[in-house]
Image 1 (cartoon, helix red, strand yellow):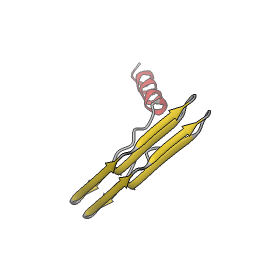
Image 2 (tube, rainbow, N blue to C red):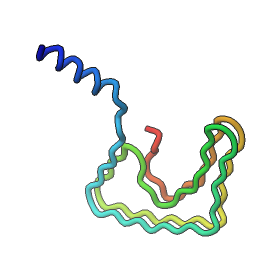
Image 3 (cartoon, rainbow, N blue to C red):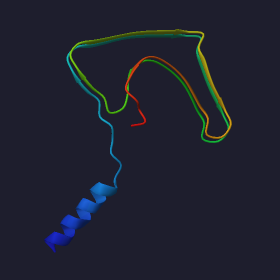
Length: 97
């Protein structure tokens, strides 16, 4: 009985999605500014985004890190099925991993 429960538990963990973790060791300073930005997504499953000063996804940073990002008058537009548009300034890592 104990073996069956262990196998079921192992199968649940194997089937579950892996969540990304960001690990930072050291001092981190992020200064981000956006001005007059717009993100528009039209259609099915589209993504449009403006990102400034971010640490994304499964990223490990060791040591002191400074990010200074600024965007002015930036626009991201995605039109049509499966299209992606992004304006990313001062971004470390990838959220898709």
